[in-house]
Image (cartoon, rainbow, N blue to C red; front, top):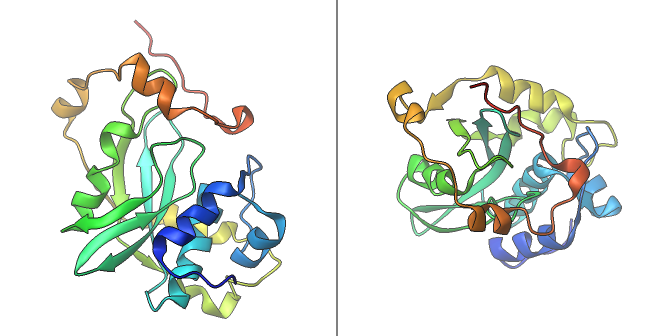
Length: 198
């Protein structure tokens, strides 16, 4: 594991990695070797790197509707939450540690979590998952696929962000923000949403 001096240094490293559009989950060690990562692999790598800085290796699962889900690594500084993330879009990455609660941190992603149709798609989030529970599987250094951690995230409780009324009254994202969101995206890795039936 490379020596990082700060959470933002971890984010900077993830930003230069090529986005991995394959359906796999490499360990942090394998991410460093391959120099590619998808959002889940990026979160695992960030959590492992945060551990070297003295933070707990925590990740949070974000569930979306008609869009890709997302996983972020979280940390606290001065009793406030921040996040590190690898994303195929420009707007779902780093968050400064200025958020007073986990929900406040998650909501910082809401207006920027959009699909290619311009729908705001974030719907729920999990409690933080401490990856130390997977230490017996050597999740940081194994050569084996870590898809089972993703399966675990799928099974745990998630907190809903919107009521049905709120969901039905959401506005579409303007074209300019949509364009900014997908600048530099790897086309193969972009989720193709279903169009709503009239």
